[in-house]
Image 1 (spheres, rainbow, N blue to C red):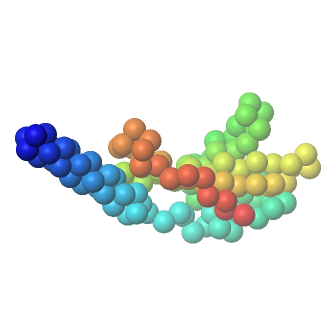
Image 2 (image 1 turned 180 degrees about the horizontal axis):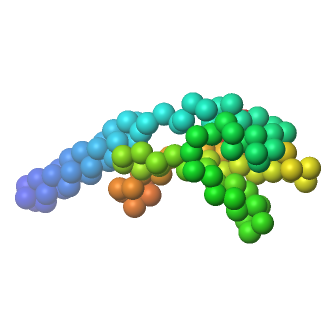
Image 3 (image 1 turned 30 degrees about the vertical axis):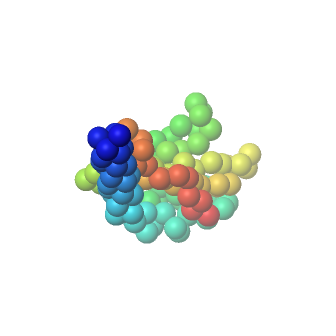
Length: 113
């Protein structure tokens, strides 16, 4: 009985330390690129490209949005910019994706506008 208690306690401690480590890494992610906050509704795709200094993938004809990627040391920020029928920005959502952690350390979507 005593042995099972020790094993259970050891597993609990390992779980807490492991989850705590993941949380520390999530908290220490770099800030979203500052120029992304300058994107606002109604901007054309060319105006968006002139503001962001990052790689922009034009996926409007295939997926209906542009994908902006800012690469860092441990992952990358990505922003999805959606346009309305007039060609102006309607929404922009950003998230940080860690290269380690199989997606467990990535952030949820964050509205840019």
